[in-house]
Length: 155
Image 1 (tube, rainbow, N blue to C red):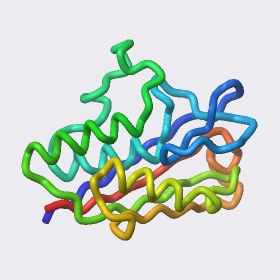
Image 2 (tube, rainbow, N blue to C red; image 1 turned 30 degrees about the vertical axis):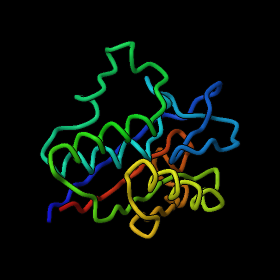
Image 3 (cartoon, rainbow, N blue to C red; image 1 turned 180 degrees about the vertical axis):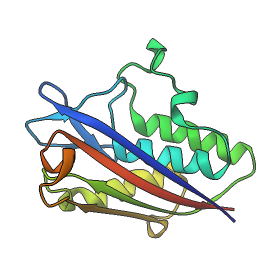
Image 4 (spheres, rainbow, N blue to C red; image 1 turned 45 degrees about the horizontal axis):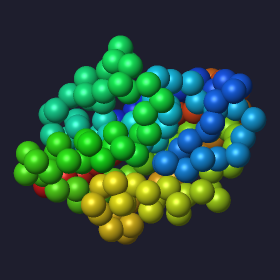
């Protein structure tokens, strides 16, 4: 068994879609990034790569490469999963937390879990997604950005 941890953060800005866990969420602000800036999927991707000692998504999909401009992070996660499976690893479970003051994430969690399970060739029971606020503290509390942590157990 191997474990990996992933963390990502992106700034909230006007004029961008808010996509988390591959789900478009209605909100006045979206996440700024080279790809679709899905912090949840980026944290999960980094956790999986970290568990295999394969670096991070910045190395796999550099923001200096226009090929990844506005990329769908579900497709990036699928590529990460393909890479770790090709190396002989299998996902046991993923546990992730989204940190955001707004919007409320709970109504979207089941759709996120389904997207992640599909991309990871896993059962939905192997995927946990939670959300929390930071009680109006810090950059997430001031609604300047959204962060996500993830841990992945592989064998």
